[in-house]
Length: 331
Picture 1 (spheres, rainbow, N blue to C red):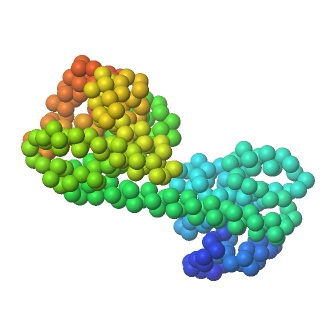
Picture 2 (cartoon, rainbow, N blue to C red; picture 1 turned 60 degrees about the vertical axis):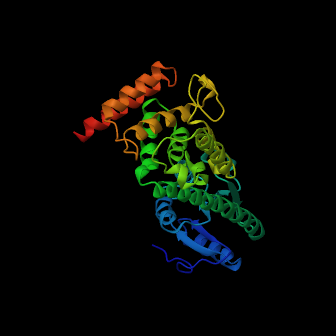
Picture 3 (cartoon, helix red, strand yellow; picture 1 turned 90 degrees about the vertical axis):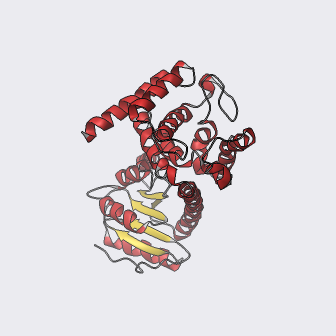
C-alpha cells in the first residue's frame, strides 16, 4: 500500500486520488497536483482505489485505463453504478494514439479524459473545474441531510410516530421491488419515505399532537403540509424525484384527497405506493385517541379503501404480499 501524500488533513484545494500501476506515473502526477495545493491519495489498481474512496472520500479521481486487478474502465463503471459515489468525478488517462479508449471512457461514465503525455496546464484546469463541481454536489448532500434531520425531528416531537419514516421507506421499497421498479424509482421511494411529511415541520404542536378530532380550520392547515414539503424539496436538485411523492401521497384515486384533488393516473405511481404504506403504518401504530389495529384489521381496511375507489387494487395487494412474506420470514 502506498502512503497518502499528506496524511488525513485536507487543504482547501481538495483531495485527488491518483490511480496507476506504474510508480513513475504516480510520482509525476502527485508532484503536479501538490504544486497546485491538492492533497493526493495514491492507488496501484482499481480495487485498491475503491477501498480508498470508501475510507477517504476524495473530490476527484485520476485513473489510468490499463491496470491489473481492476482497470480504469471497470473502476469508473463501479463508481458510477453506486448511489453514494455516482457523482464522484472521474478523469480517465488515455493514450493519445488510442481513440477507442476515449469512446470506452465515455461509455463507462467518465466525466472527462486526458491524453498522455499529460499537459500540466490542462491537468490543472480539468481538476480545478471538477473539484468545484464536487464541492457543489457536497453542498447539495449537506442540504439534503439537514432536511432529513428536520423530517426525523417531526418524529421526535410525536412519540407515537417514532420509526414511522424508516418503516415507510422499507415498506415502499419492498413494494417497488416486488412490482419491478428500477433502482432510480426504488431510491426515490426510500427518500420519499423519509421526506413525505417534511412539510409538517411548520405545524404547531397544538395541531400535530392534538389527541382529539381536528376542527375544520385545523384540518385545513394540515392539508397544507404537502405543499410546504414540496416547496422545501424543490430547493434541492437531488430531491426533484421525490417531489411528486411529497405533494401527492394524500391524494385518492376518486379525486377526494388533498392538496390538489387529482385523480386516477394523474397521481404519480410512487406517491400512490407511499400513500398506501403511510395509511397502513398509521393504522397499525398507537395514537393518543385510539389503539393500533392488528395487521389483519389494517389489511381489511386497505381493501375497503380499494372498494371505495381510493386505492389501486393491484398496489394494495402487492403491499399485502410483502407483509405476508415478511411474516413468513419472521416465523
